[in-house]
Length: 335
Image (tube, rainbow, N blue to C red; front, side, top):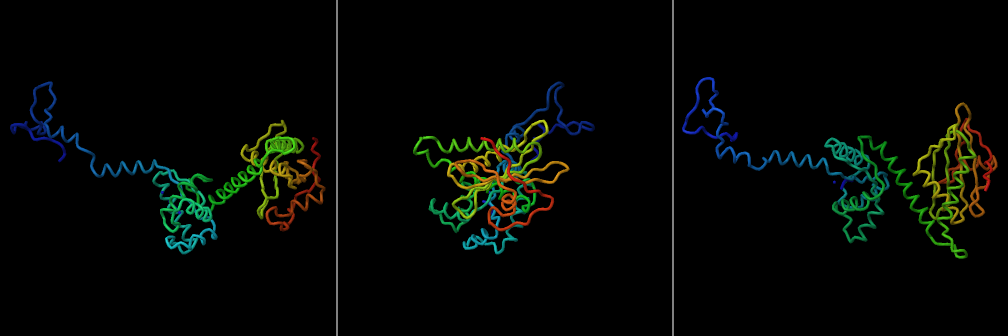
């Protein structure tokens, strides 16, 4: 869903040179040919229609745009209730959307792709007193809401590859916003301490201890905390610690991880952390901890780690264990 005469004068007195002069006017030596009024006027004429169109095309390629996509079949079905939305099936819609993006790219237009949320669109139209059953309203929602949220730059990649990344980044943004809201609910009634700030400092210290305890290797950490909705808050962090102690991690992912962990600490919710470590030439090792007792991570036993890792954090359904993976008790994290 996108809402984005040759200018030469006649010789004076009829005089022309002959033969090899090429028909030019005879002029005194050392002086340039006479330029008549019509020649000067020709230079001052406005651009032709063709030049104007070309200039507009060049300007169009310098105007960025955002295209909001109905990524899922359910979202597409929700928009089919509007008479002005004329697509009959999601597959055709996606093919047309991909063609539109390729057309923008061929023009040299910088285009971002965002998600079109039907529920958010309905709210927007209600608050803005707009008729939701018009292309103009969908365009305005794209420009004012979708373009201000999570988006990914289109670089010619297929939508099948771009959309999973876009959805994942949108989920991370939603997780961060919700976890941050939990951290700003208020101060401690008895001590007046900023519980959100204290919880975040605690979460940062815990993450540092986990990384130190894990030692060298590539590590995959998952923190999950129960939320008010059907799915928990989940944050994923990849780190790499070299033998010389040098640590590599993504700052944005580390911020999200600590924010989710801090939300569990601040609200005293029974969350957990799972760590999967990989070393060259060795089997992967999985360990885990429970979050409880005012922000402490208690090591899980091997059986508890197996149960936690082999359960889908979002649905609660069992997941088959992976071959080549050892499940170990969580490491002690000294306070």
